[in-house]
Figure 1 (tube, rainbow, N blue to C red):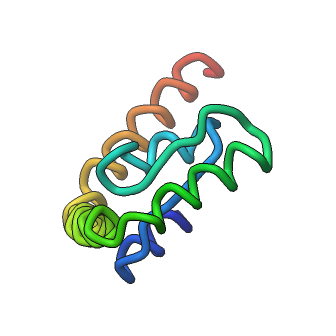
Figure 2: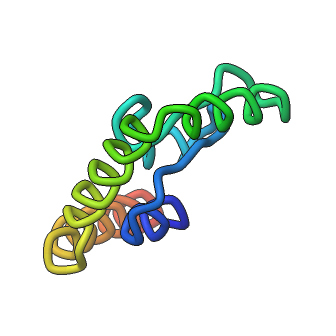
Length: 95
């Protein structure tokens, strides 16, 4: 959620390659996913992204545009249906 909220402000993300972060960041488009889960990898990715202002501007625009696809009206019906299907399945297994 934090990545998408940052994207909504036009801030691209540079993230570690872990679940959740790799799902919310499209590497090379809305930000970067580092090669490793280390401070050095994060620092290298950040240094690379700020050295190219045109590329950084592209990341910003892409991040902002992608964040708009996560509005509540767009995701709430799908999320609710998923939650309800899982709740029904658990009820059938438990019952």
